[in-house]
Length: 100
Image (cartoon, helix red, strand yellow):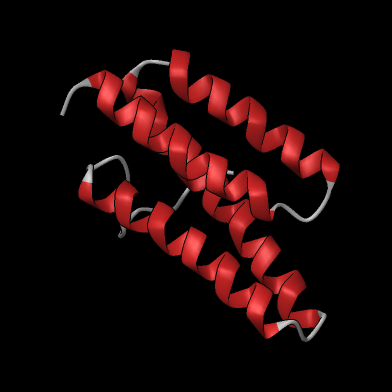
């Protein structure tokens, strides 16, 4: 896969994550991650996937705490897409522990 493809696909999935972020501060954080995905070297993209997954996990947890199962399903779908992309593109290793 080319670097352009990887960064474009990651940016697309982060855009989906941005749409389910729980507050303006996190939306801004994801927007910055999208910009980073478009300019950082390929070796740095895995870290963006992990960071996105952590934000997505938080968004899912908030939906569960609020009892909003429809929003939870929407958010988990976004996270699942990001996870699958990270794995299939070999940007993340499922047996690795993400850096904090």
